[in-house]
Length: 200
Image (cartoon, rainbow, N blue to C red; front, side, top):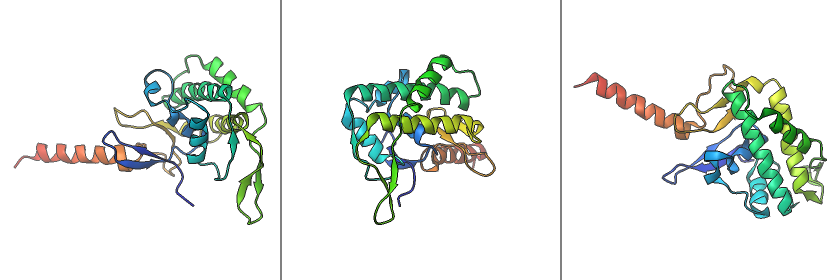
């Protein structure tokens, strides 16, 4: 099985794997409100289907997605940005009541139905819809935001990175979205600063 998380790319095109630790946080990587709009990928049903295939959901999900479900996915994602960012920065969520209502409405619908395939692997019941996918994502968000890791939501420590993740490390001191990206950049900058400060 592949490592969890999605493959992202640095501004210069170098790939790295980012694991936010939760399905609902993976949806944030599809774009979002305000400054995140430039990353938008949920333009049509294929965008949502492609995201689901790349996500931590088990493979083999055959979705039927409608245009209104794509719009609902964007609304759910934007609500999740509102709630997760506020939690990560330990501040009240502006528009939090509306965001909670969006998440709860999606979670109230029937979710995807998992099943055991004849070969013993995890699969999906046929007839999966975009609405079921969004319910599954919303229920994951409810579990995260009301569960034991709710206070472990973090924003990457880099000044130029807004990625959010769940810190599941034992000491609870994870700082970076991914060591291959922001963590390494920080180490390089710190090393250069030490060298320049030491002189010759």
